[in-house]
Length: 293
Image (cartoon, rainbow, N blue to C red; front, side, top):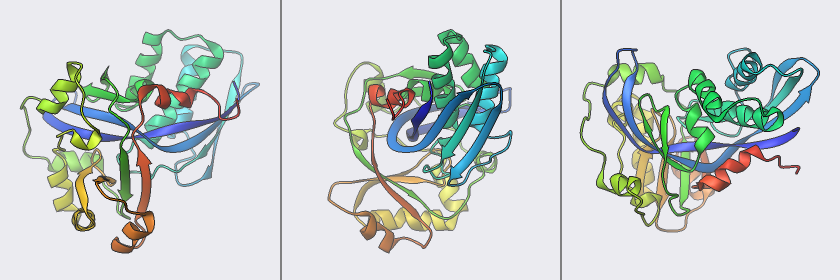
């Protein structure tokens, strides 16, 4: 299967850090949500080579790139007599907590297995977990609970489509340092709105999920510009603003009409503003279908 595929981003509607694990990671409870913001991944099956080229945006182009690592891992575990050329058009801001690289990796795994049909679902899942904690979610998409490092994923009923604004200031946030700065853990139950979702209930929209992010106070206090942008979004009329993952991207919900131009005028130069929406599981799974089909 050759073609170009959408590789959707995610936000964390809730992120709770409940403990430290023996393997050095933190134990998380998170609510993942797919959004329409996406990269484009062109995949072409070839004779034998494995190669990657970043043709738009910013991403590593060497062996550390997750999309290339995913292709190499697939061919190591389920060797077909073929190779693959990958081209990336990066539109998801890098280092934003939006899972762009993890989504690219999951897209490559899914497309290659659609083409070669060599992996079992359990095998593909295991491969995704070795690539990164967020990668398994992108094999599921939609709305889902994440446990463990975030790599134990339980699909939930789709939340009704909701407009969401993704705002990425021109700063970088080290995930490792952000977690190192975290002092207070939150071993409390999940918020009631999320428990209701897990029990088959529903919410009006994504803005109605009463989640929080344990990393938010840490990161906003540590990176002053992020705190300023956070407050500016409320000043612009946002009904809710949250950090995605450990940042640096924030996402906001508005009850009134606004525009990219209006928001950009309130924010520091270099801030990336994207108007997006939440995606259900079926639509998020469309990343496995070529845009050229």
